[in-house]
Structures are given as structure tokens and as C-alpha cells.
Image 1 (cartoon, rainbow, N blue to C red):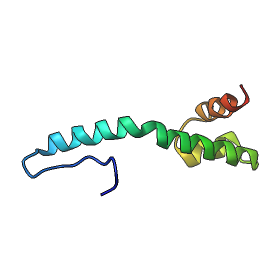
Image 2: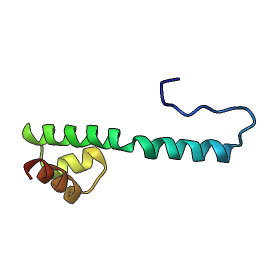
Image 3: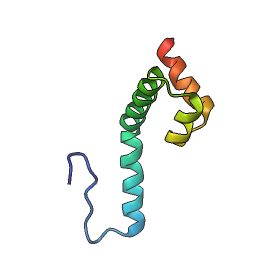
Image 4: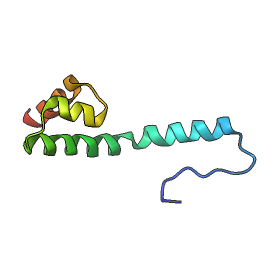
Length: 73
């Protein structure tokens, strides 16, 4: 178990565990998206196209474009 990970007990239901997982993911989503965005920017600087980046990351090419443009702003 890593620091900050949700702790479960045997008395909790699956439903409770899923809700805890959703809260944990929501609270830490900024970390994952920040890393994704940094990787997208770096790959774009290295020559990857918007569509290549979109396919690789599972997001639309327009979202990729916004991520890259945020860097320039």
C-alpha cells in the first residue's frame, strides 16, 4: 500500500470500496492529468502530431491542441 491510498476494512461493502476509490481518484486526478499533459507537450515538441497524440492518449485531437496551446499562453 502506498501513502495516501484508501484503506479498506472487511466490514465495508463493495459499494463503499468503489466510492472510496472514486473519491481517491478524484482527489488525485490533477497529478495524473498534469503528467499526461507534460508528456503530450514533450512529445509534440519532439514532432508528434496532434492526431498521433490523441490516439496514444485516448483523448480528442482538439483536447490535445488545447493542452499544447495552454503551454504557449
